Structures are given as structure tokens and as C-alpha cells.
Image 1 (spheres, rainbow, N blue to C red):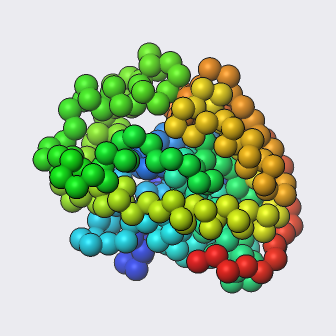
Image 2: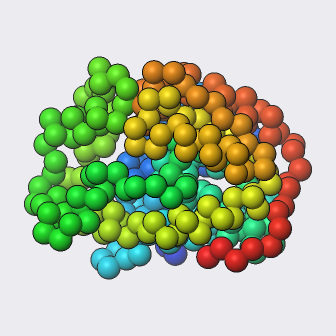
Amino acid sequence: MNGSVNQSAASPLHIESCGEGAPPAVLVHGFGAHGGFWRKWVPELAARHRVHVVDLMGFGQAATPSGGDYSPLAQARHLAEFLRRFRETPPVVVGHSLGAGVAVAASLRLLDEGGASLPAGLVLVSGTVLPQRLPRFMRLARIPGLGELFLLATPPRMALRKGIQGIVHDPDTVDREQVDTYREPLRSLARRRAILRAARQVSPQAAERLSHRLADLRFPVLLVWGAEDHIVPVEAGRRLEAALPDARLVILPEVGHLPPEEAPRASLEPVLKFLADRRGEPRVAGGPGSFR
């Protein structure tokens, strides 16, 4: 992606920015991915909005500190620090899968600080927000010894292709470009080590605490879900819609867990409308809480 890179020495995030227009959009990938996940959305988004594509710590081109805290709550702290910059023009934060949980947790942190830096809204795409059983690949990574096999070498293209095909509805949509986009960062041992550590630091208890605070988020939330998502089933989207004060669920037929990859046009259209509706909308704060 062509654009400026915003990364201070104090931040472990890697953020690439492009485009112009309000409200800004901040894109947060899910587990095992990086900012390249949004590559099919970015050109059209950037034609209308300032876009900030985030690599969370340990992923993509972000920092990989040895022994670092890669948990979703730690990632939320770093994301909240970035979002504090947007006091004049609050952004819409878009999160996919685990990145959606990070976006929600960051919003709650900002709310507890008084709400001055709250986003204008959230877009949660196949969002891992509510408590659920960990996906199989994450459960395997948490087994001592077995997870370390991931560190031995870059995953073969064929194995990675099969893994991606297992979480989409139409396996024919998984092409070489997509496989290489996911595989390239995994060529680094330090990055593979960081991702393994991140898998082991996901806490179901944190998701439970998060779920009890959803009613505090009183700004608009768009939920985008694949009807054939077997990683975070669409029922989770329906439960989120019921738990959030101002949420709307869009369900995409014949789409799995990766809507921006599998159905980029159909998944982006409701997001563009949501962004257009946020232009000039006043910030809405919620009540006090204790989420950390």
C-alpha cells in the first residue's frame, strides 16, 4: 500500500496511512493476519476517506519484542494510544475477528478515560468479542511442544492454502496472492515466535469481562458477518446485535470467516454507507466503567 507510515519509537504498532476524507477509518486485522488483509478494500476506501491500516504488535511489520505481552488487552492499550490522536475528527474503527475484540476493548479504555477520544463508530467483521471456544489452530498452538513445531520453518504454501480454505465458504477464492500475503511475514522466526506467544496469551476470561461492558458502547456499530462462518458463527453476530445499544447486523450469504477476502465488494458496500453516515456526527459517550 502506498502512503505514509506512522510509527513512533514508543509504539509497537506499524501503521500505514493513505487517502483523504472524513471520517478516517482505522483498520485492525485478526489473529495470524496483518494489514495486507484489507488490500482489496483499501483502494476504494482511500478514494473517500483517510485510511490507517494497523499491524498489531507481533504481526506484519510491527515490533516483535522478545517476551512481549501480545494479549488482546495489551494490543487494545496500544490501539487506544493511537486513537487518542483523533480528538478533532474521530475515526471509525474497523476490526476483523480478534481485531474486533481489540477494537471494542480499546473503545472501552477510552470511554473509561472520559470519552474524549472515542471513535465515531465501530465496524466489527466476523468479530471475536463474546466468549467462545478457541479455534482449533489456536488450541493446538497452546499445547507445549506441539506449538513449537510452528517455529521450525516457514509454513509451506500448500499447508497455508489448505488452512485458509478451511475458513472460507468457497475454497476457489483462495489464490496465490492471498497465500503469499499471509505467508511473507512468517518467513521471520521472530515473527513466528511472537504469533505463537500471542496464541498462548488469548484469555477467555478477558472476553467474558468484555461481554459485560457492551451496553456501555452507545455509539453506532455495524456488524458484518458471513452466513457460513464456522470460526465465529453468525449466531455470535446476532447476540452482539442484541447486546449493543446501537448495532445493525449485515449477513452475507455464501461467505465464510474472511468477508474482505472472499466477498470484497459485498462486504465493503455496507461499510462505505456506514462511514458516509458518520460524517459530522457528534460523539456520544457512554457511562463510567472499570474495563482494563
